[in-house]
Length: 118
Image (cartoon, rainbow, N blue to C red; front, side, top):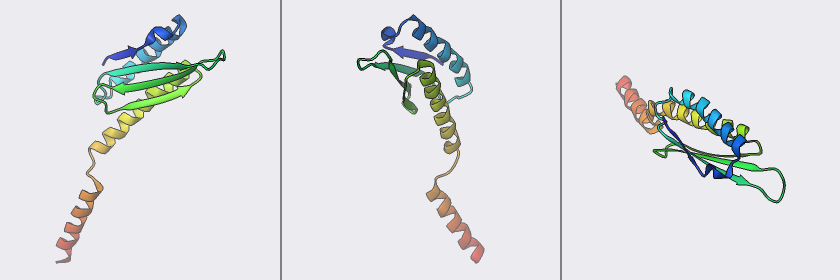
């Protein structure tokens, strides 16, 4: 799996090392999820006249099945939130893919009720 970064020039050296280490840790976790291919991490900084920065992290998967948009004041906290959200979306999608839709379940139940009544 490959993680691409968009617009990392706005980060200083400390923030860049934080980004690389956290994404490397989550890259190991993503190896278990086969439906996540390549990710693109987009980082935006919102700073309105003050000294603090508000980070916005947008993560998109290559096939556009998963996406997150997370904002917070701390970069590492924001990255953890975004990557955990991608993992939870992946787990949810894996559970849903194997199950039939509700309409199909209703039609199967109606057919079996008719068979057992006769």
